[in-house]
Amino acid sequence: MTALFLLLPILIPFIAALGLASMRPRSRTRLALVAGTVATANTLFTLLIVRNAPADTLTLLRLSPRLSFALHLDGLGATFAVIVALLWVPTTLYALEYMKHEGREKAFFAWFTLTYGVVLGIAFSANLLTLYFFYELMTLTTLPLVMHAMDDRARAAGKKYLTYSVGGASCAFVVLVFTALHGAGAPFAMGGNLDDTVLAVPRNTLLTLYFLGFLGFGVKAAVFPFHGWLPAASVAPTPVTALLHAVAVVKGGVFAIIRLTHFVFGPGLLLGSWAQTAALALVCFTIVYGSAKALASQHLKLRFAYSTVAQLSYILLGAILLTPEGLVGSLTHMAGHALMKINLFFCAGAILYKTHREYLYDMRGIGVGMPKTLFCLAVSGMALAGLPPLAGFVGKWQIGTAAATAPYGYIGIAALMLSALLTVLYIFSVLGIATMPGRNFDFDAANKGVEDPNILMTGPMFTLAIAAILYGLYSESVLRFFGRIAAGLL
Image 1 (cartoon, rainbow, N blue to C red):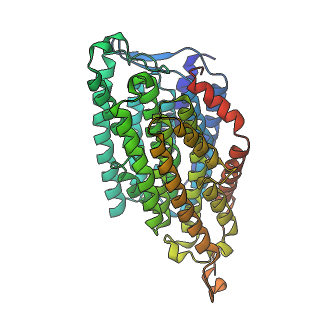
Image 2 (tube, rainbow, N blue to C red):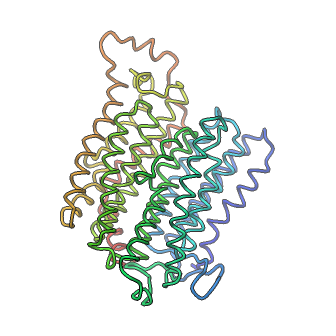
């Protein structure tokens, strides 16, 4: 398969978004048909490209001998692309039902579809310049989704999201300019792609620039103290928060940091340095901080948002250990977390959609009226807590075993253990409130008119719950694939 095909999954959503934006306002059936068809077709096409990955690089525009916009598909890019492609279809189906009560569906699906192509552009980027371009374009395409309601809360969340993102982009741009002078315009390469001219640069300068890039891309990865935009963005419609917290934006930040760490600067430069230690300290603190804030929150979507803050740093912890074992754990949890967290937001959205209840104290006994929703929440929640053999256990085990043999790894293990305890508490307290509200509780009165949503919402929820089980049970082949990426073979 020629590399030219890499451009099509990026362009198709762009063209479809223009078509969706120009549709008649009242043609909801046609809107749903186009949005669903485009998402499904683009996913199938993306999976076909990944299955028959072209070996060559597609250069779209050459700015200078050192700078070019180019697309290429390696093992890491394929991993991110598959995560995005597989989860975009159930999110689209879910949104077709959920967005009925949100309004402005035409604008929503236009921006939603456009974002699909942009995120795949990040996955297919061959170098740091191309990744940076799509990374910043993702900010612009997701901003209208965050601000969809256009009320005071949505506008405030959008301003915060944009402010944080622009700040992070500025830091990342400094690194982009520097690395472009030293060979990083070349395709990504496991172990780093800086050329020999970098040897003339003081090591401390290189480490400072790496840490600046880590902080810049760390904004979208919600690393403390740059995480504030993520909980605020929970005001967006549930399909958007599921997209932000599990698939597109936050995973884009994590993906960029893995590229910067392992494919630009390289473990050989960073291992044992103060930059590695500082990054590890930040992610370990973020793990505990996010879990504690999740437990303290009584708002269900906000609880899951802070959970995302913590879980993203699990992924970063594995990557910043700078060992092949750590990278395997990082990628394993990146994929597993996407399955678990998107479904937790789907469940929270189902409760909000059917009952308009947002806070835990309003959800007492709700499991009786919404048993399907609670089942999916329980499976995904227990997987997130790391109960074997579910999806969350596999990644956390890999990260923990990698940390056990790494310098300062005991700090990471301590953070993982404390976070695991907090995760069990904030997940099982939700399940307890929903099923065991206490004595003398009137289940009939509390659940009057309460029921599970229709198949467009419960279908994706059940599919993802089953996927979280299968991912844990049949993880051996996944671990082998990620092991080949970490070894530089893919």
